[in-house]
Structures are given as C-alpha cells and as structure tokens.
Image 1 (cartoon, rainbow, N blue to C red):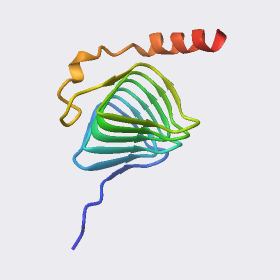
Image 2: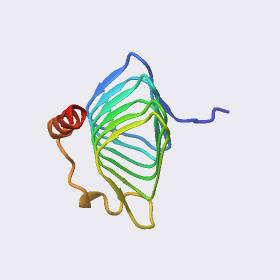
Image 3: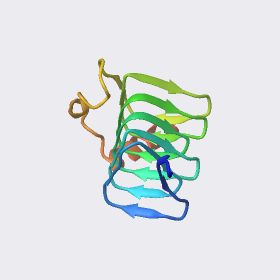
Amino acid sequence: MFRRRGTIIAEGLKIVGSVTAEGLVEVNGQIEGDLFCTSLVVSPKASICGGIQAERVVVNGRVEGPIHGGEVVLKSHAHVVGDIQHETLAIEKGAYFDGRSVRSGQGNGHAQAEKIPARSRKEAVHNGREAAAA
C-alpha cells in the first residue's frame, strides 16, 4: 500500500550527531555529524558539516567534510570544502570545491575510505582563505 521513497531531512530541521539510513536521503536542512546512506541528495539550502559515505552523492548545497562515494556529482550551486574519494566525479560549472580528489578502485565507494585522512574544518577553511587571498 505505502511505498517508501526515501528519507527527507526538511528545511528548518537541524540534526546534531551521526545519521545512518538505507536508501535515498534528501537533505534540505542541516546536519552536524557524519552521514551514512545508499544515495544522498544535498539541496541548495542544505548544509552538512561532517563526513559523507554513500554509493551515490549529488551535492547542490554546502558540505564541509570528506565525501566517500562511488558516483559523486557537484552541481552548479555546490560548495564543498573537504576531500572526495570516488569512482566517478562530475563537477558542473559554478560549483566550488576546495579539497583533494582521489579516484578509488572498483567497488561501492566504501572499500578504501580509510586511506584518505580527512583535513580538519579549520585547515580547509584556512587553506581556502589563502587561495582566495593569492
């Protein structure tokens, strides 16, 4: 009768702590903590301050932290500060990305997650300011 379509973190909702979900997660609000799911969509008004681990990640909002995924897409309004480990990575014109991109081998995007040490938020922001000042 009812068909589960995914989990929505609504605009105006702020979650502090880790989030784990099966299937699709659509973030329209804020998360301060790590997020583990199958597929993730970060909307233009959303922000995540923490690590992301998913098979498919589409970012059109703000992410501060490492992303470990199979297929990662940074849409035109994406603002990502952190390293990305991926099998495939697409970056649209207008997206902002400050971090390292490391291509992983075949698999689900989770196998080599520990090989990239995450830069701290302070270090990433500091490096971003240096790049902007240069």
